[in-house]
Image (cartoon, rainbow, N blue to C red; front, side, top):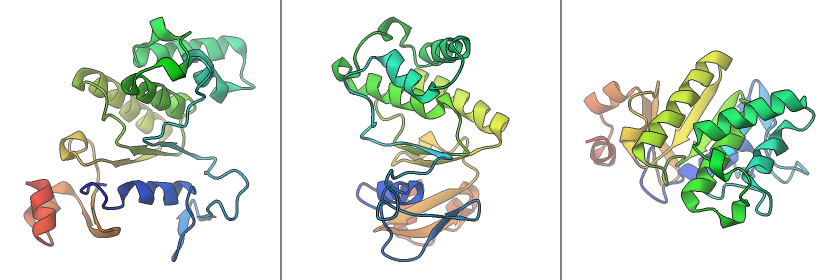
Amino acid sequence: MVGKSGSGKTTLLKCIYGLEDLQGGEITFNSERVLGPAYNLIPGHINMKLVSTGYALLEHHTVYENIADILIGYHDDYKKKKINELLRLIEMTALRDKKVSTLSDGQRQRVALAKAICLFPELLLLDEPFSNLDIILKEKIFTYIQKKLKQHKASCIIVTHRLDEVLSSADCLGIIKNGKLIQLDTYKRIKKAPVNEYVKGLIS
């Protein structure tokens, strides 16, 4: 999903995940209606994971504890192996015992990504997921995510204002403006026949 700042990309992801109540229409996932906070004591969908700009981390816990929180109930050996794998992926093994509150934005973003893919969901929702990462680390993490998507036969919706982040992997491209989805198709078809100047400007 691509659009200029303020176009409604983040709001769309929150609605899909169940963090916001809809003013109209409905969202279904696996034939199940997704309901917002007005209907759920704990908002969010059990088979989805959302990485948003707020990160939703346990601020006064360590990096290791934040990831371990997702693995409650799992065998200690599996838990240790999985967490170490993710710490290597996000290049934060040396910071495993650092409290999240002391981390930079880029480091916090990495921890949020690790938590989201720790137990891989059916639907992964990523809101500007690589905005604070350098290009080498971004490509490393995204390659891992792509591998897991295929392995688990899962889906991913990425929201970004940078088209280059999604072109190489996106099956479908959605263009959002003022809260409305104005075009949805493959990149090649959209580039060949943009519906208006706004779309043309975004993909040029």
